Length: 548
Image (tube, rainbow, N blue to C red):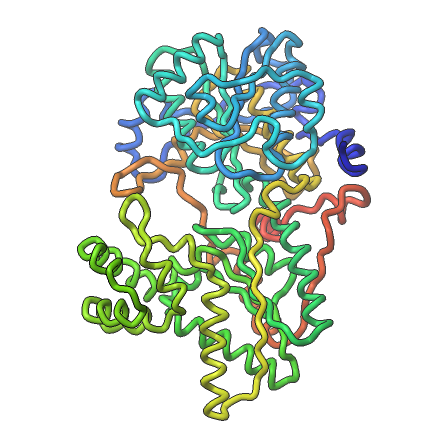
């Protein structure tokens, strides 16, 4: 059974850039693009795929092969709305060029590519998933194709299948993996080309070439609907402070976009916290100040948004984590033998610097317990810290202290929320449905052109789709060298919130007013049918970045 909306939604025909609409288009090779940093190292690692030209598709006499092709596709990493439309676009592009082309979906992510676990996609099968959310068509996984034996296994599988191309749909790590696989295959004389598609709801895979990663539009609109509902509830009940944690461990794009859409009272942006060297105590001071001022105005309610990765950007928390990692590395067994919080606090006080001792002592007991755990690499993990609960506990303690000193009579009744998985598999917005279909369709043309080591892109996305421009950028042009798990590796640099960028500047110029006044906006649910100004608008972030 499918819902009434899903049934009607399957008939929606996603829009394409004008050049790709009629099938009469040509591929144009632009200027060669090089890595912006670490050029020599990257050139050495990618001898066969570095220094390739930009690619665009333009109207004109088609200069692409119409030979029947065999192409594989894989979903890599976390889910993002629109993934099914990427596959549908790829499928339609190849079948339109030659009905005898075949598309194979590798199952459960890159692990399926390594193991040769796949299924052939058919008209009937693909049609079931058009314009739907999720990755359940072929499922996803987080395996990486990087070990020599895995690369060799992939090459053999491709040879056995007679595969002309592989399209990897994923984020920055997955597209980096695509570049490594492309380099390996080309150096080994394989005929299989590899093309990447930019995906992540976090919005951090974007740069001068890629305007947006798919899924960000739908996810932030889904969260913003819920936040808007909470804003309405807060101003109706007038007695609760809602602390909302949002996805975004490395970057705060999701939190910033949701703030731009809903105008909450407080929004914390990790990148600003790090740039200013803000301490945990200063963050708590800021929140308490707003809570107290609103209470004095008769408003004992409000909304706070915080990205899940905030603790890693707080200066004194970062120092504390580094010190704890070293201490646990030397004394882990002894720490485990300490049965009370007081005993552990006394021990750490003798080992930590005075500043870190103060921070550790100020943390709630359950957070102190979380920080005693270590991952497989021996590092203290912050991923399990429920940031909104940490802030609630510390703000509550501060207000209780102020009340005892008769400095405020503010009522602070907090509620916590985490919004993450709710947005990853939502039915794609019109923007994501169109954008993803266009990305997949473009990937199909790249395989037809027998090009490898590229990530597809669609530009001019704040304009109507007939003005969109499809193309691709060599992955090597986006690479830099970073230390990951103690080793220098080529990776696509994550795009963090730019404090000099238009989205943040717009937010910063309004946040003081939003803090004390009820400027809430209620976006409502995603609309799929109706006027373009309601249904087809991009995110506020993208509009401000493109200044349209």
